[in-house]
Length: 341
Image 1 (cartoon, helix red, strand yellow):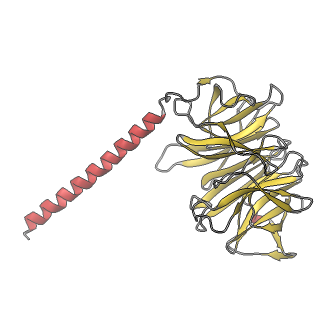
Image 2: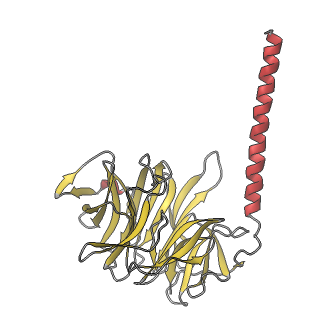
């Protein structure tokens, strides 16, 4: 083959690759533009005031996933009509939670070569109180019942809990003092009655007690996951039980809803939902046969709310916490709900 022909082949290959790259960018841009257009039959979303303040009627505040100009914004709908018209705030979040007039918003900051993320504390009017840079992709967020503590988890390696090849970082913020614990890995782990250390320790899925002195979370180490109870004053976490992930404490403080890996299920969808009674430590399987990769929310002492993938991002479902009943779709194109009022 002559040198001239080799150069011709090389130039042709470069042009083809450039064309593929341009085509991919155009398709991605077109897809993004499409998401900015409201779809027929989707929820009605209008711009308006969204408040996290106590009172003001029972309502759900959540990340609006419906296509249109308000996609990814915090929105609200009456708790009694969550599938009805929505009011969007103009404030965008990837993950969100709120309680007692305080919100935590895990947000993407676009710009530059690489997307960055922040944890933003919001007041009742959704104004920024403080912001903290995140070391990875947002995945979990919680505010304590009294609104004085916030926690969040990010992926610093990997992007899914389904496998084992991931690393997380979970942070705690005391809003009364401004003290930030950048990583729960700085707490002392007590496992089987002894202090435990291992480089592979990961935490995620914090849920706070009503007195704001303790929390529950997931600890992963040695290829296993554990329910832990954290003591904020002592700065310890103590293992309680194996194979519990993303706990969520009931409003009355007596039960934890969680996801559990069940043998025999597909590796990419391994979870089922359960509720643990803290007094008896008895587990109750719930009537949801699909794999739920979410930290559920208690709407009240009897009802759980969680997300599942939907046609336009995610949809919300409700389920009785006693093991009976059946899943009911609560709202389309919605994620990360908080029930206020």
